[in-house]
Structures are given as C-alpha cells and as structure tokens.
Image (cartoon, rainbow over all chains, first blue to last red; front, side, top):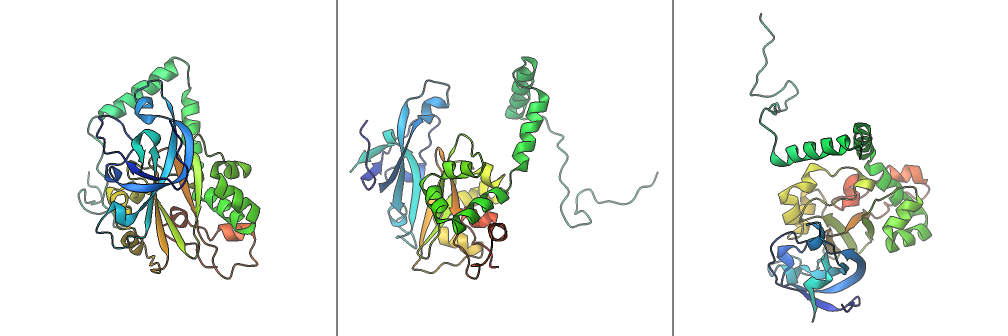
Length: 91
Length: 213
C-alpha cells in the first residue's frame, strides 16, 4: 500500500461495512489532507474479532470544519481524526 | 419501632437525589465480566489480589501527572519539543508510562486552540489524566464538539477570539491526546511545582485554559 505524504489531499471512502469500524460515519465521503503519518497499527476491523490483523498505516487527516458541515459557523476551524489507510483515497 | 423520617423518593439532606438500589439482575456483559474474571482466577492466570491492585493503580492516576508534564514543557523548551514530537516517549522520560496507546501532545498558542473529543466512545489519556469526567463520555459533548466547538467551549466559559483557529481532535483510533495549554502571563518566576498547580484537567482536554497565578 502506498504511503501518503503529509499534505496529500484525501477523501474518506463512503463505505458502509458491517461490524466494528473506527471511521466515524460523519466523515465518510468528506475531503481533507494528511496531517501526519502514524503506525503501522493493526487493522481494528480484524482485531475486534480475534483475527490475524494486517498492519496498516494510520493517518491523521485534517478537515476544514466547513468541508465537514456545510452550515459550520466557523468553517476555517479544523477537525483532525485518525483514519486507517484502506479508508482513504488520494485526490 | 419508629425510625427517623427519611424520604425514599425525594432528596437527601444534602439536596442530592437518592440513588436507586441496584436490585435488577446483571446485564449480559456484567455477567460475562464476572464469568471471565472467575475463570481466569480459577485457571491461575490472574489472582484476585492482582485485579484489585490494578484497580488501585487505575484509581491512583490523576490529572496531576498530566499537569507535571505540561509544567515541564513550559520551563524546558527542549522537553517541549520532544513532547510535541513524541508524547509517549517524553512522558516516559518523566516516569509516566502511557501504556500501549501512543500519546500526541498538541500545543495552544496565540493563534491556535486545541480541544479533544472521542466521538466513537470515550478514548482519553487515562494514564496521564486519570478517569475521564462523565460529561466527556456524554453523547452531547461527543456529538456537539465536532459540530459546533466554539458553542461548546462557550458553555465551559471559554470565549475565544475570532482570529484564533480552533482545532478539534477526534481520537478515533490508536492515539490519545493531551492539550498543552498556553502558559499564563505573570508566571515568569514560578518553579515547576507551582506552575503544575495552575494546570487544570479541563485545560488539558482543551475546554478550559490554565489558571492565572
């Protein structure tokens, strides 16, 4: 899996898989930029069920509040969240 | 035999509602916890004393540890740099073990104010701050902080200038967050221990600022 450099614009995939996921629903489909690269960390979607878990890069992605909530009062404030690599597509 | 009157449904003499006795049965997960714990004791994997000791260790953690880290960062610029680069390693340097979770320290400046939330559950840097306050785990705090952070901060009594950028950190996965509040004015001559007393739990979550001396 290619590692995305800090600053890379990314979008959170709009997936709706069943089970334990750690990508908040309110960020799916939203665009931001990689703030820093973390990890590798074990994929929690496998770990949660006791399966052998793949090590994945974990990204801190920074979103403009205005890109997350179209009606944000202060759109230039930001929101950072940790998103696993397989949930991100570079733009 | 007569007994002193007390109101079973009303308020205690101190004005708090009585807490209902827990007369209902165990929930599925409570029963599961007891069953797993008893099995582990029976199989010799842990002892009751070890479980009790671990609970003691959890209860002994308090925001004082986080405050000591912040005060050190205020007086020692090289430590501050190491803390911002790797929060876990810098905390370990001071003898605080942050456990398997990795710590990210985010610093408040003139232009930036940071606030921490966990929308998915209640992730919190317990090893440095102790147990999270109840409001941190409430749906209201978790859902509103990512949507209207300034409004939430205002309810905590914190009105930020428009020119300040608010950065919300949603701890969604493996990292835990601690805010390094800005050092208050008028603290130039103070030593680390005195400075640490100004660092509140709320200032390290980001819903407050450090106290004035």
